[in-house]
Length: 228
Image (cartoon, rainbow, N blue to C red; front, side, top):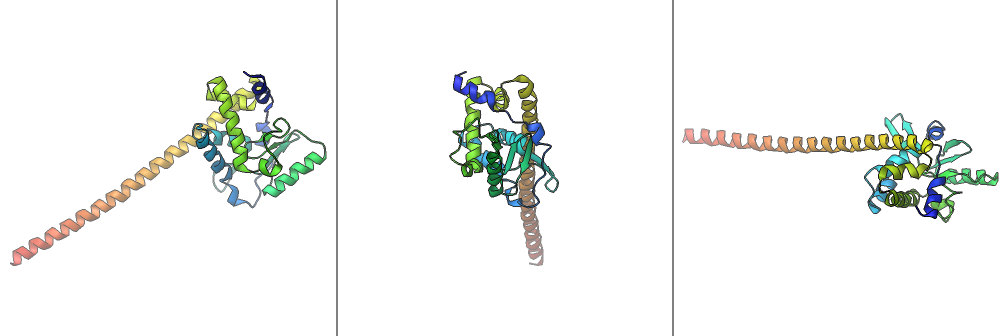
């Protein structure tokens, strides 16, 4: 593995277990519930990543259970530092939180949908505005994941190394991501099946209507012929 790449993946550590038990979702911000999913979906297509894999990583990094939607949601305005995660209500609030941390001298800060570390990845973004742009944030993570896969020739290893080179950290992380990934793919399968069933129902209903119309026409013609 090249030295630079080894350095990058060795330090990309995020305390996902601590984050998942941290702050709650902001009361407002319903318009952002699909923001990370949309950003990771675009990135997966751009870099030909396995469908929903980057999304699964995002859910692992910033996911929280949403009671109303009854599912885990990744939050774009997430900041992790000093051992705890913060789910801010807006991009502006997230940027303000990072600046407050930096003003205290804190450097080790993870941001956005993919929790990219600002200290270990200083070249990732030109500004905090960029860092909290979901598309830009996901794009950087997507490029990194693709590099890791090319080096290891394994998506399993790439996911593990996205978090850490150390087994005691990356094994539980990889397992968590893979579990979420499987759940996400199962959701897609259920949606496809539901759409297929609905399509079949509509087509069958239309066919039945045609059959009824033909039967009615036949009955009418028969009655007309009998009268004649």
